Image (cartoon, rainbow, N blue to C red; front, top):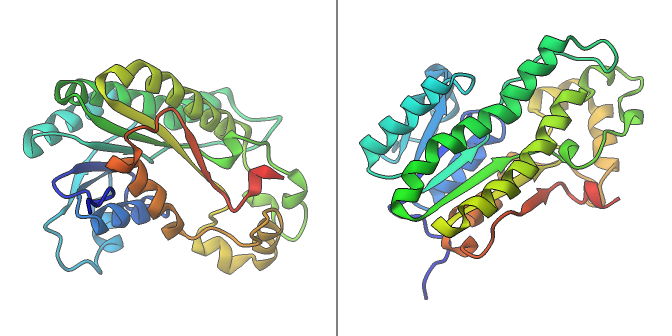
Length: 263
């Protein structure tokens, strides 16, 4: 029987692939035999994150600055030249700065809208010519539950939970990613390119889990499964949307949140 999820001979790119969530996506793709290029700015972080992988014959690092169009265009040109094609692009990286609801600086708002939403637009534009030429491709854009619903501000009141509050520009930009996904799914469908979004729910980093158990319990209480997400919970959906198993799925936002957004 054909394995619909096997990624042998597939070339996949994961931006920010050495991060908290991106690294699990990378390992999910590697587990299905893809060749994976981690795109980022810090080779040392890449080496540290994947030091447990002894055989790195299918894992590569390439430098990219997602805030710079020239860097992005050069990156995709070089990857296509080196590997001969680009089958999968996971737009996971983002760049953001600024906090606050009423006193956020306009420059911080503009920077984050570009670093979260604009950077994905730049990467999609850059990869399109290569995927169109081969008449196939999978693009996965990472959004957020706060691109779907607003924060419950009660979660962030007291018990040193205030530092974790989600700022307005981040959620607005993540919401834009979902619409951008639908737009390019419609635009690129005739070229056999599927474009989908993955929306993680509560996936606090290990540092947050260690420093504030009360906040973690609050996150758990906000979803029907009463738990927080683990990075490996994103492996399955990433493999699905990268594989033949999703050939008739496009323009969708798959929410991985323990049910957070159904309440």
